[in-house]
Amino acid sequence: MTSTAAATASRPSSVPGAPGRAALLRAMEDLALEQGVNNVGLREVARRAGLSHAAPTHFFGSREGMIRALALDGLAMLEDELCAAQERSAHLPGRERLVADGVEFVAFALRHPAHYDAMFRTPTPARGDDVLDRARLAALEGLRALVEQVHADGAIGGDPETIYLQLCAMSHGIASLAVDGLLHDFGGAAGPDVIERIIRAQVAQLP
Amino acid sequence: MTSTAAATASRPSSVPGAPGRAALLRAMEDLALEQGVNNVGLREVARRAGLSHAAPTHFFGSREGMIRALALDGLAMLEDELCAAQERSAHLPGRERLVADGVEFVAFALRHPAHYDAMFRTPTPARGDDVLDRARLAALEGLRALVEQVHADGAIGGDPETIYLQLCAMSHGIASLAVDGLLHDFGGAAGPDVIERIIRAQVAQLP
DNA sequence: ATCGTTCCTTGACGATGTCAAGCCGTGCGT
DNA sequence: ACGCACGGCTTGACATCGTCAAGGAACGAT
Figure 1 (tube, rainbow over the protein chains, first blue to last red):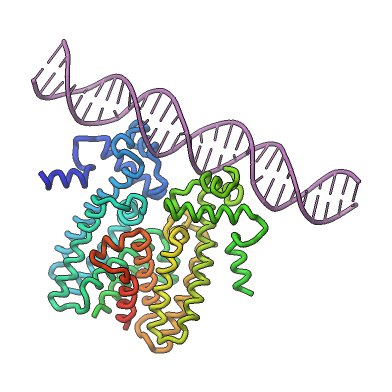
Figure 2 (figure 1 turned 90 degrees about the horizontal axis):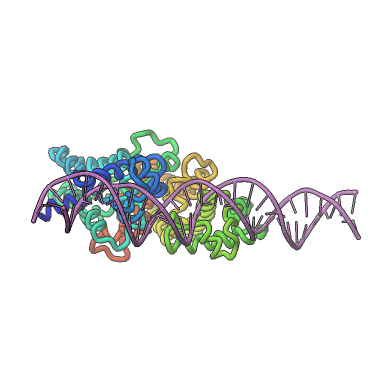
């Protein structure tokens, strides 16, 4: 029950029980990609999903609830995709696995900017929401475990906790800049492979 | 001279020509601190500033223009404060100066979260705005120059461009997480000095 | 045939962003 | 002294928005 309930709670877009709900989430993602998450309007989402103007409020309770739903959706996706990336790179040496995880994290943000915004860059629904906090922790648990394992294997030294935070901060920083189109600003003459270059440099420097 | 002219141009809130404008900017900062930048409403700002409901549109043209004004205001402040921090730490060894600059950057974000949001975390007015882009570059020029100087002094090795980007990404990442209250989530048992600890670790690892 | 659920709509409310038009004091030219 | 342009702001109106209460249609179970 718990697993089904959790899956249902965190990925409501895939349950067939409420067709309109999934349509709304899809429409919202489209709109968020076009005009940014905090410019999406409930009524426009409903219009695009072919439903009445109050359908979003019905399903999500409020505008904030709708963004929250997108965030939970995205966090479940990120958890899956980071896990898959780890399996894909399981045969590589320790530091390469860290690079792969970091690159995958930023790539996810660029692949799903609307989701990423809702997940980590929309301060409003972030405060005191246990479900959301837990989902965020769960999505990153893989990275944390990887750091500890690579550390245990002796491929890196130092304090694993600090290193995990460094990687989180750096990945989130690059992802945020990239999603906002600010990397080019900051980077000046930076090519398209800046992201991997920075992450690689970062991991190479670890003690 | 340049500093005065730049401050006047980029900090219109301080010119006495339009008393209402400064009052609006102040009211907006207050409101943004309470409910987040993208939840501030023009009418509520006007109300709090004691002006009519259309005063903000008169001065800033639009909601987006008002956020842009807050961003420019903040960028000028950041430029000044980073510069001051550099002078304060000019006598320290190279790496310590990098730490001081990074810590000051994040401290600024925590001291002025509303400004920081408008400056670096509000994607809407960021696209294709030369003035804003230029102001962002100018605000960070000090950090870039510092990295190059410390590199020229031989205190760090590697590619200064990459290192500058690393520091930017990391600082922005920490600042974003901290402003959103997510650092505690990610950090688990992290104390209040996490920020300096991460930055210090980062700088210590530089080649 | 009636009940209960699920899924959604209708209608209304106050509040918002934006635009056009106008008001009013200060300073300046004449 | 007088007009007059200009900066600084207001008034009023409009479409649109988020939210809420109430209700209805489809549909399986009883």
